Length: 219
Image (cartoon, rainbow, N blue to C red; front, top):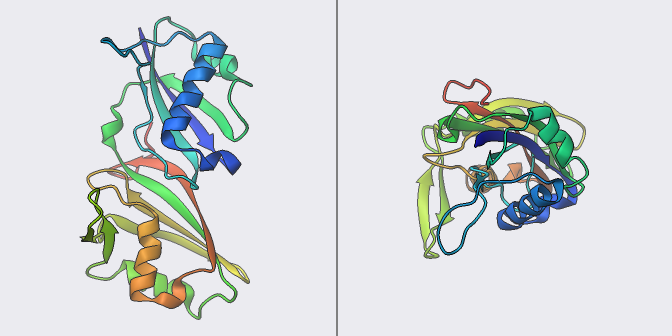
């Protein structure tokens, strides 16, 4: 048995399929490629694979990971080649390597927001920096039961960099991937609460990289 980690991109229209559909897509791709996965035991066997940081529908990513267990020892480059043209447009395998580090050691996700405005707010960067520098950043989110609960994301949402053009801004952040998980939409919710003029007319969200607790790139 070989434990492998695949890094892949999920961009374009494919960003609008669910995490469950993504897993089904990979399962079918492995079957078409002739890659034999290990299956779980029991009455309903499933392929042993996981993508530990589910991506919200509509969000893109350049840094997703998929952990799999193969029945046979196959070179990394050959695995990548076998999957070529077996996945739909928008899903691209960028790397294959041995799974040696537990996914639980990934702490941060680099997230880029493209904020589109009719007119960029005055002193936009300074105001966004000030929001991230607050002593607390409390937002409301719904629990699984449907009730609203206040959550402080201070310390789990970090400002990284900012670029501005005539009608748009690129905001790069580090958001906690686990314990707790910070949904990027929480940043927009913070704009709504603390400085509504920062809420864009339109925005896109893209994951750019995974990091460990020390902000080293996670492999």
